[in-house]
Image 1 (cartoon, helix red, strand yellow):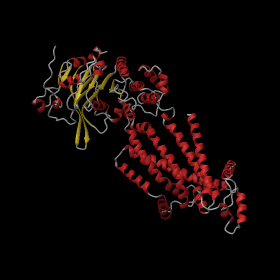
Image 2: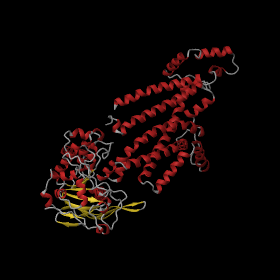
Image 3: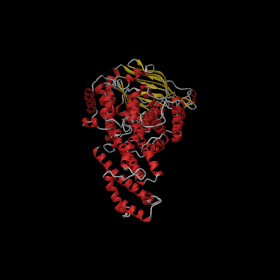
Image 4: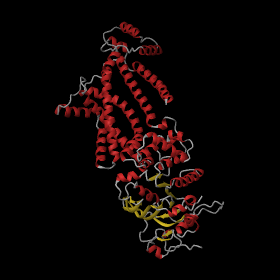
Amino acid sequence: MIGNVIGRLLQVLPTLFGVLVLVFAMTHVLPGDPARLIAGPEATDAEVAGLRADLGLDQPVGAQFITYLSNLSRGEMGRSLHSNRPVVDELAARLPRTLILTGLALAIMISLGLAAGIISAIKPDSLRDHLLTGLSLTGISVPLFWLGLMLVLVFSYHLRWLPTGGTSSLRGYILPAVTLGLGAAAMLARLMRSSLLDIIHQDYIRTARAKGAREAVVIGRHALRNALIPAVTLIGLEAGILLGGAVIVETIFSINGIGRYLVQSIQYRDYPATQGAVLVIAVIFITVNLLTDLSYGLLDPRQRRGAA
Amino acid sequence: MSCPAPIAALAPDLLTIRNLRVHFPGQTGEVLAVDGVDLTLRAGEIVGLVGESGSGKSVTAMSILRLVPGARSSGQIALEGRDLIGLGAAEMRALRGDRIGMVFQNPMTSLNPAYTIGNQLIEAVRLHRPLGRGAARKLALTRLAEVGLTDAARVFTSYPHELSGGMRQRAMIAMAMICAPALLIADEPTTALGVTTQAQILHLLDRLRREHGTAILLITHDLAVVAAICDRVAVMYAGSVVEEAPSDDLIDRPRHPYTRALIEAIPSETGDRRRLYSIPGAALMRPDAQACAFAPRCATASERCRAARPPLITSGARGLRCWHPLEVSP
């Protein structure tokens, strides 16, 4: 088990390196000269050249990359071109909001998705199964921005139950998190239904019944644990997709998180800020995938001690 | 290894099945999978239930546990005098795994891959006995040792995928026997195993019934298995029992043409190189209820066989459902 964990951690390193290369390359591949952009349209060629030297942009690309890495290792991500504040500080201020939003959305996805999938699978082709299957199909099909606007219209504008966003209290996160989590929950519900239905027909479920176990034990203890293995894969993948969705949802609900920061940075051509935001999102994504991989071992003993 | 088992002959009836019929609702009307099965098991007796795939032998066995999804059963199944068909769900659950143990065909897929063998055995004990984990663990280890798993402690902490097929089937048997049931149903317990392991498992079943007095209903398509350990055999064809007899008697002197055909289909062990015998035709899924189900494949079938279904006639230890029984030389 411990060897497995170390192995997985080592596998993360090349991925992380690849991310760093890509993030670094962004400034060099994208059209436009950062130095000219920073200096502004009024600047003379000499001023731009001076700035370029100050920023180290006249160095060979390899040397620039080394400098980038060494700065990063000291927690340096440069200054935002827009606000002139350190990017690290700006990101640190916004990260908790994005984490709360995606965390809540993930909780909504897991609780609703698993519950709906299990309820469907226990009585396939029943009325409630058809109802839930129909709902989840709708959930998958509805676009995020439309769902968000509709929720605001109904729950904020007409019913006045919840704020349209804002991050002063947790209440403000409810609508954005539901918007973000519902589609993912629908996806999980469908996967959980088919996975559980598949497991329920396995021989060892028949064995559990033949032992005299109650149906709740047969499902809860014998079927669920095995059915969760594919669900965990989806939860891991969806966590990444939720981060992508956060970019949209934060914009709709004006939550000042990493996603919205990324969109604004791109609009301002704020390269250091864009680099920082992309890097943070990528690191979160890698971490979630690592946790997903490690959780297989907890669920499935065959992955723990080597398959027979 | 065949045994006359004098104990069994004197023992009281443990399981009596009378006129069991099992229907499945299908797309084009109901399918009758089991059509009037009668069967009796006495305490400590091993009875073989033999037949081709689709003859209804597994459905009959699973009907005893009432674990046939979507089926409707009628008739009578009585265990120790209690009618199982009318039993409440909770009372039925209390019998499963306690008075009736079950061993399935495929030990590779019949154990839960997510839990250790020990965990699954302890669960089986504690569903029926008010024992703490320590006491349950002790009983589980005893049973594992009893079924010939010499390294019981290691098997206890192993996951199913870490064991061989034979070891898994032994663990499965230990789990089915954990509460020392009165009846053990074994559905093709050796079919998925290698030849040497097969013999060992049969030997184990025979020993367990001697040690615990457990009656065994052994479902198989293999008459060699029957000859090895069964006291009596019931041969099923198209949902009903066509012949029943003490196993030596049945194999030496079959009276139903189907039984004789089954015996002739056993490949000879003496190196006889003639072609393998097979029964011509295939069993009908939905035989005509007004005729002998075997008539279309039977060499001795007459008009009478096609016009009326023969009743099950019992005389002494034998039962037979045939209008034209084969003559037996005394």
